[in-house]
Structures are given as C-alpha cells and as structure tokens.
Image (cartoon, rainbow, N blue to C red; front, side, top):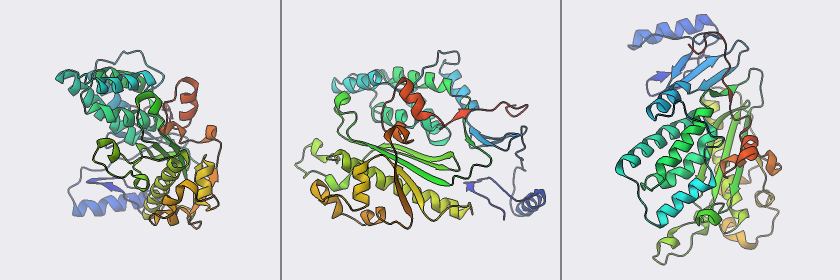
Length: 360
C-alpha cells in the first residue's frame, strides 16, 4: 500500500506508517542514485515539489501554494510593493487589446518580451495552484502572442491581482469525503458585444474531497456546427449556433475531463464512486442529455459521433441541475467584477494558514 505518483524523476511517496516509508526509501536507494528523502510534518517541514510548496497543518489539512515563486516574479517585475487589484481581468483591458488588434497597433519588442514572460509565469500558476487565474490567462493568451499595444499594461494588472492572492493556497480539509465532483458552464459568444468574438467559452471545475484538482477555461471548438468552407478566414471558425449547443459541448468536455480524473484516482488507489456527479445550470443541455428535448435546431449534434452516447450513459455520469448563482464553474467562462467575482471564486482558494515554522 505504497503510492508513488511521479513527474519525470520527482516522486511523491505516501505509505501507511513510518516503517513502510523507511522500507520504500531503503529499497529505492539500492536501485537509484537519489537525493535523499524529505518528510512532510505537521506545522513544520514542507515539500517543494515542482516549485509547488506542499504543507501540512496541525489540523491535518494539506495545502498547496506558490508564494515563493510569486514573490520572485513580483520582484523581477518591480511590483513587490504594488497596489493590488481586486480582479485579474476587466472588460476595459480586453477591449483595449481587441481594438489594438483591429488597428494593428503594436508594442515595442522589449514590452512584448516582458509581457510574454509575465504571461508564461501566470500560466504556470493558473495550471497548478491558482484556478482563480484560469479565465483571465486564457483570454489574455489569445492576444499576447501578437505583440499588441497595451499587452504589458494588461500583464501588470494581472500581476497586481496575483500579489493579492500570493499567500493563498489550495486546501484539502481533513475529514472532507465529498469525493469526485464536476461543475460545468458554457457561455455562448460572451465576448461578442465587447470584442466581436463569436466563439463560445467552456468552463469546468473538478473537485476531489472539496479541493480543486482540475479546471479549464477555453474557447470551444465545435466540429458539429462548422460552416461550409468558402475560403474566407471567418468561415474557418467553428462556432456554436445557440446557447443550448454551447452548453452541450461544454458538458461533453466536462464528461471527458471528469472521467480522466476518475481514472487517475483509480490508478493511485484513491476511493472514488462509480458514478460521477456533474453539476450544470443549463436546462437545454440536461434536456438533450436526457434525450427529452425536441430535435429542433440541434439534430446535427444528435447525428454526430459517439460522444453523444457517452453523455447519456447513466452508469458513470449523474447529471444534476443547479442555479446559475451556485454553479462553481461560472467564473471560468465570464469576466466577473467586484462582488460577482468574489462570490464566484469563493472557496477555490483560502489564505495560507500560518503555523509556526511551516513557511520557513
């Protein structure tokens, strides 16, 4: 009963009892030239794993944070003493980038390099310990590679927000046994009025025993609604033709990601139920999944690939409707501001507990 998930040559070892832990390290040291072992202790020693700091509180909660890397980046950007912002992105910044693209306004090579580096660091955080950054990083990414005017201002705004959550962490509360849960939302062409963007956005949050373990915010690529190619760039875009369709495609992505995480949990012998609860706020999507809606405009989806059948498999997916205000994936599809953003991100991360030498 020794579990060893390993990223390249960096293993994390979990064993039952100190004797089993000691046995494992003795055996692996006979085979490999290792750098020794470091033990995670309550309120004391921490583990630095792929720049992620793993700590254990006296209450038995496990925390994952990136405060050391964030502080280093803020120092390099000259933002160590900056005034923090309340959100990582706002509509004015995205509109400014979209306008710069339309008018072919470019920034200097130096500004582009600084902005690109800042985005890369933010992407790492958004994929490891800071799900609150996922939507902003995804939206910024579609503009950053083009060297547009305003890119560096956008990145400084983003990192001023990161400075406000640098000491926040993902936390796995001891005693929480909620198991695997998936939350999904789709936003149909949500940026169209602001930037003219026609693509819809998918947002997914996967939690295990209350802690976010996977999340996603991305533009949809909907093969079922591709317009006939007439040779113009616009016709090459594949977009959802209705709100219901965008929600269905989002649900399909959520089902795939949820199943993937379920397989990972089974691989490391973590307890997981046979049926995955998936929470969605779209009645049209649930009607399609339950095969109770009229064929109507979405018959082209019903005639598509086997993923439709997978969506309707009741043996491993349990679909549940929740109000939009209670959908934890809502923040992964929209630019939320003020109280809406605070409410949407509540519970994703918590302030890092301060206990003795844990942060030394």
